[in-house]
Length: 307
Image (cartoon, rainbow, N blue to C red; front, top):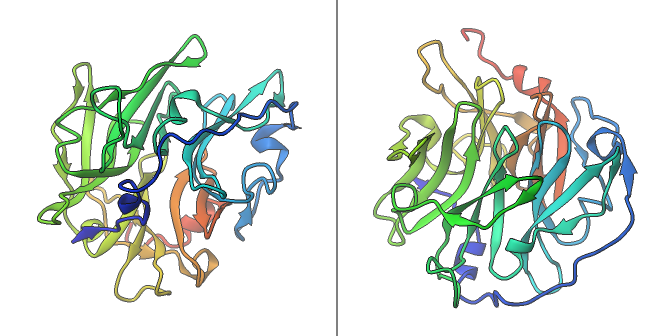
């Protein structure tokens, strides 16, 4: 049982982490919820083409609960620089996408915005010492917002980052942190969950069962804590590159078997990096290099009759 190791993991070793790109200072681009985009139905649509979904790769999109900020990561098409992007809503108008300053110097990606919008957990090779060259393998880091601004990143520490590779965090409404991790030699690994307390994060517990079997990545839990969506390559999958699956929480609290989302969502391309809108009405995910969204009702259609 292994996590699906993204191609960028090995890229940490060779990527030049100090390339810089100018931030854009364009005028506000749109007004209205979701950047003024018309919400989709049961057919996935590209989200904000030309604004969010554009040249390069984009993924893991989150929206602050009050609708004041959209956060996602992108891979710049020219030099492969990975960084976190923010779009702010000020007075009803959306700003142009801006690179968050702390994500400029080192490889920084896979952001996860907490449901209250005050914590941002992400994957980075930034040095644990705070300066110098980037690490060869990534850790999970967190930055908190105060007075409307993001602070300085801090490493989540040994309880969470005890494995060599720790990636794909997701923070739930009940202060649980899901993530994937494994040792570099693949001697151990899986999907883990840790709870945030007043003293930091608890010792992670490895999840068992169907959601940790085969190749998997990118856990994502719905705001009502009833559904878990992830990317997996499993026997019976629709396509070779892997699909999005959903698991429904049983009455006993455990996660049930993974159910393929079918060809209404999954295509011959790779779908991954799922997230929910704050109200749980829409599912965002990446397909190829763009971000798509679809009505979350499509998940209920896959719910087993016994649940």
